[in-house]
Amino acid sequence: MDIKDWGIIMEETSLIKVISCAREPFMLNGWKHHLNFLTAQARKWSTKPEQLFPLFVAKLKVLGDSQFDIYTGSLEPEHIVNDLEKTLRGFKAFERDTFTRWIESSQQQFWQLEISDGSEWVIRQGDQQDFYIHIHPARHSKHTKRLTGNHLRTGLSTLIMASMKQEKPSLPLMNEVRQNYLGLSKVTKSMAREIFSTMNEFAVLADVPH
Image (cartoon, rainbow, N blue to C red):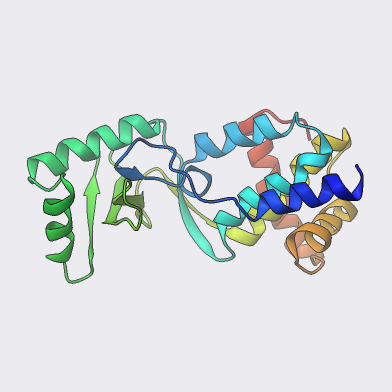
């Protein structure tokens, strides 16, 4: 890949924005909050050419650096939002104006609702015109797992780069990815063990060779 091609790819990475994996008006960041969506993305990207790796890394930026909760249950995004819509309509709080008033009636500016599989979801005001209902799984809810952004970004990036290169994930490759693509320092041995454990778990779920 020549310098011109690399420049085009790097320009495209700056245009990455969060797109909901659910229908309007629900904003659900599938990369960060829905395990089945994330593993499907990993499976798809593992077969792409290596020159597209910076785009994959750019998409992982939505994971952030700190901890977050991801839904691990079997319900697809459409089922989740259907459950939530039914409850919101029962509260007469689904349309934009009534939803905004309902959110503003909470001192915390959010509400927490349970859906059909027993998982609980935080409901907030969205900041996009067409996606005004922002949702994510509640902390300590049923069917959720708490993850660390940098660890998951490192693990997934290493897994996908190794697959693109058609080689086994390794500590040198992990550190190369962290330093050259993620802007992070090399990992310690203890940290590497944690990241490889997370990476192997996702590789099995996504059916990506590792």
